[in-house]
Image (cartoon, rainbow, N blue to C red; front, side, top):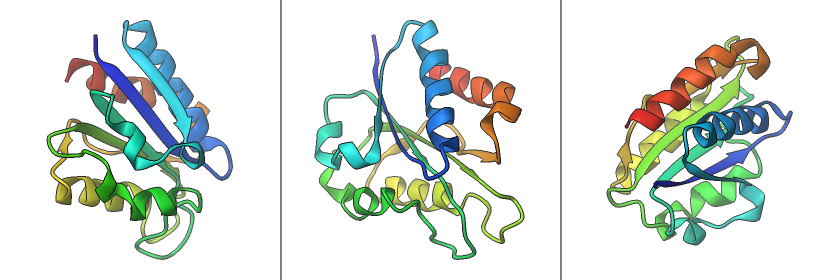
Length: 146
């Protein structure tokens, strides 16, 4: 059975809620899923997992606008064993900003630079995850199929 680690950084709670929905969906399919707030884990602690799911909210006008708690993890991702690691990225944001969910794109780029294997297109949720349940569950099912 695959061990999945979901790491999220959330300011308003939307990305945390998205992480919980993803965890519930994958757990119901029999996966061993652990979900952690990014402030309670370091990149070095990701090595014992088969799949990493990284969730980061984006709220702002800058191209690289990561959620505050996620900044340290992002800056130290080179300390994790990403080479060939199955990874996928998700996040919540506001489509009225120029770089809608730019954190998702930035994290995906960094994962690729570090040799990680993206197994799904990044999930970008506009606003409240409760309004996007089908989209989130569908994305989690794609992770399960990969």
